[in-house]
Image (tube, rainbow, N blue to C red):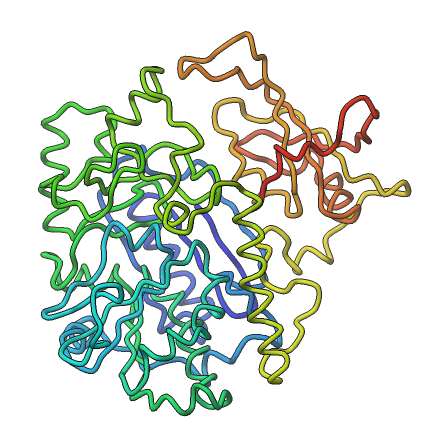
Length: 477
């Protein structure tokens, strides 16, 4: 599984046998009762064996959810977090008027499923701002670091004016930081104080716990995106019907089966725009890097070469915002966050948190104390060997080696795999953000394992024959 460990807490997704997971949770409560006695362990049973994680990754991070609010920039959660409501109470409050419901997840998650209580309206479809029923709001974020800046927008404040604010996310963790930020601004920022917000509430245990209380879905419509090998799932009662059909279909990719009624899917395929709600494969938006929502037909057509998915096939946010290149996205994202932070610091509401200002998810302050190999020439180019040819991805490598800015894979172009792509040889080169990042990476050579293989890492300065780093291989959106 995967464990994110920070001073503020833990965020873990683990797989194992039923008995071993239960023993693990009980051991935590016995060994550290003060820390874990009130912890809600969310257990999902009877998952297919193919959905288990292949290895355990323990990641020391500055924040368990990356909001760019680490250290002194983070309002204390215990002091400022919203009122936690159990699913039954949250369900009742969802239907109340004079309410705004903020989906704290990323847009690609919200696009395939969300709460739809009676008389609810969407931000883009209403002009009464929720006066006759609850108003559902999608902040349209690609990552959580955008939330503070979105919360500070004038149009966001106008929608919350005089309302009670409900927040929800997958498991409840993202709401802890999001609600604390809003409550903090309600006490310290005059522009938010004057809004007359009637209260801030969050769903205890998130969508996951709501599904356990309402197995038929309650007010939920669509699917819940999850960050494990299930990708997404419907409420238990509906999910059981879906997987029953999947088994009957003999579909090899049945764990990625669409809704019971595909035409009712809330999302749309980015390739053909037909209703679709299941993420599959490793394709990401070529401009901003979020997961691509591609239907089965377009996925297979791209795989067999009959209809390739080109760079013009982008996520709906990039289409809506008229973003066509990685550079355009990076400039927009950096400007959005920088404008917010400069405004907050001018008000005295955001303390400079040190080197990391929250716009870069790939460099973590907790790495500063990691051992470093000698690097007197300040080399930033590294060669990597013994990578897993089958499973290695850009995301896995960037997660293992913080600070990567460019990746070049060693492939044989005149030899293709069954998908028609050049064969990866298990070797590559990376550019690191700083000589210190490079030195920390080399210090892990043959110690760091990725997909059960020790990674060989060495300094390799550019030879001057080619432009390095190549601009087309920039990563870290």
